[in-house]
Every structure is written in structure tokens, then in C-alpha cells.
Image 1 (cartoon, rainbow, N blue to C red):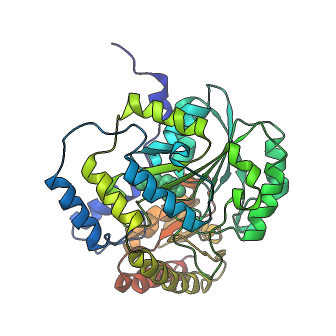
Image 2 (cartoon, rainbow, N blue to C red):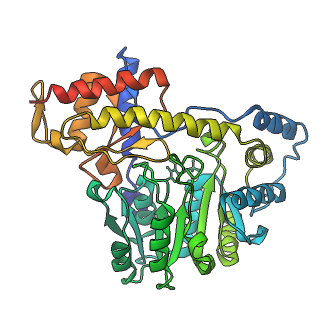
Image 3 (cartoon, rainbow, N blue to C red):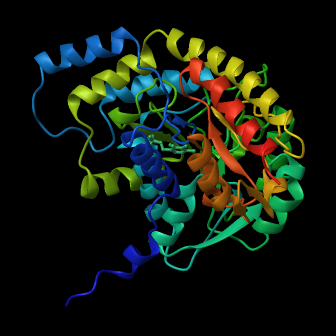
Length: 399
Ligand code: PMP
């Protein structure tokens, strides 16, 4: 028998999908399930996006497109990132991909040789570790627990950069914690980054439109413009516009990196389809009232989630300020039992919670923090309080 490549063995099925699948099975069996497990937005883009797609379909050439992305999309993205605070970027600084995920794989291929080091903070989005594993890079995971609000601090970053990693991968706002770095925190980390010129910096900031409490979105290059020559900003239409299935991601960075990604595109995907491109142009370039309204809605839901979680004795939940996740430390439950079922870790906790209450959450170990679990609060508002009440009742029944 021929053997599959070793990298396939290194790729693990997503723990998020495992829980989601179990929830789906229970639902199919007639159980009343409330899913806090999948991190997908629960809204659709504005009508103008569909209108643009329909219009593009009428004139579709059916041809391959640009490996870098069509010019109207690059221009719309340039205006979009200028509104975020980036300045001085042109088309040659950009490239496209089939979602931020594929863009991140391209960046890993462009920047990392086998055995190279990549560092990132934990809790991390699960795919970061998988990308490192698949390209054969060594991941240096920087643990940032609830006691430091799940945020990377300058001394930790400095220690990691002294090892001269090839890549530092950063995520703000964070999936899974919902943490957002303030202007001051970003500036303090940027002060460290400027001292280590041998490391690429990738900021995966696809939740940049979902920042609450007036903190605003900040990037290292806003604080230290000289970082521009080795920093890559990653964005996507998925979360901002409620378009995860449309699969469009983009980068803005040094020309050399944009060129490398474009070359990889020419070998991997060729281009993003014309109709999808037109929809993405409309999303980035059109009215921004959907993302604005959703940001407000999520901030309100955050309040409900935060209040309910912090009311549970022993549960510690750093207050989320962005995206649509909360990441409570539930370790107070470990070593206890729920109606005879012993709970010794996060995986057992989430399994018992789902079985007993029908509420699906994702174990924190999937994100490199086994003391916690992730709650994604994109569910309909009507399900939010009942779901949280079930979690509260579950804790109250632990003995
Ligand atoms: N980065 C983060 C932090 C994410 O949470 C996700 C999606 N869950 C992605 C990247 C991938 O997004 P896309 O849909 O654009 O591939």
C-alpha cells in the first residue's frame, strides 16, 4: 500500500467540528440544542452585495482572473484599510486568497521553511497550530492565561523574539477570547517588535470591525511605521460582512510578500471567481451599516454573556471587548461530578454539559488553554439567556 504524506498525519480534525457534529446528532435525535460552538456570523450581507453579484453574473466572462485579485477589489480594499488607519499602501502591497485561512497558509508557505520557528500567543485560533504543523514549522506557543486577561505582554514577546523566530503571528480581536488590545498595549508590543528585524509579523485581524467600548482597532504599524517593511495585515469578508461562505481574504504588506503570495496563488488557486469578486467589492466599498449594526448588537450580547458567566461562583471570565466570543475559565468544575458523571478536564466538561443541557461549547484545549471553554454568542438573541441559564444550572448541580 502506498503511504500518505507525513503532513497529513500532522493535521488534526478540528475539535470545533467534533463538538458541532455531536450537537448536530443530538438535534437530529430530537434534543433541544443551543449551539455556542461555531464561530460563524449569524447575519447576511446587505442587499447591495447580492445586487452586485447578480449584476456580475449577467456579464460574467467565465475566464480566469488575476492571481493578485481584480483591480476594483484591490482598490476597494485599499480604501477599506485606509479607513482602518493604514496609509501609504498601493495595489502592489496587496494579494488575495480564498478566505483568510487560505491566505494564512500561503503566508506560511511564503515565510517558513521546514524546522523554522513561528511564535504565537495561546489561547490561539486552532488553525494556527495546524498551519505550523502542516508546513513542518516549530510552534513556540506563548501562554497567556486568564490571570493576564489572555493578552500577550511585552516581556513575553521579547523572550520569544530573542529566539529569532521566522514569524510572529498575532490576532486582534482574538478568537477565542474576544480580547482586544488597546492603543497603549499595541504600542508597547510594537516597541519590542522594532528591536527584532529578523522576524516577519503577521497580524490576523479579521474581526477588526467588531470592537466594543470605544477601544478602536490598532495595529503595530500605526505605532511604529517602520514595521511596514516586515508586517502583513490579514483581513477577510467573512466576519465583517457576514460572508464566510463567499471565501475572500486579502493581505496588505510588503511588496515582496504580496508578490510571493500572488505567485503561490498562480499555482494553488489561480484566481477568485468574478462574481465573488464583485460581491467583495460591494462589501468593502459599499455602505457599512450592516457591520456597524452588528457590532452594536454583539456588544449588547457580550454584556448578557459576561454578566451570566461572572455570576457563576468560581468562574473567571476576562471581559471580552470584541469579536463574538467569551472564554471563561471553568477549571473550578474539574474534579467535581455532574449527576454521577465525573468531570476532570475541559473536554469532559463540554461533553457532560452538552449531554445534560443541550448546550454546545468548545473545550479550551482546542485553543491551547485547557482551563477554559469557548462560547460563541452568534446564536439568535432569544436563545442566549436560556443557554446561559442552562450553563448556570449545570454549575449549580456540580458536587
Ligand atoms: N482567523 C481567525 C482568527 C478566524 O477566527 C478565522 C475564522 N474562524 C479565520 C482567520 C479564517 O477566516 P476566513 O473565513 O476568511 O477563512
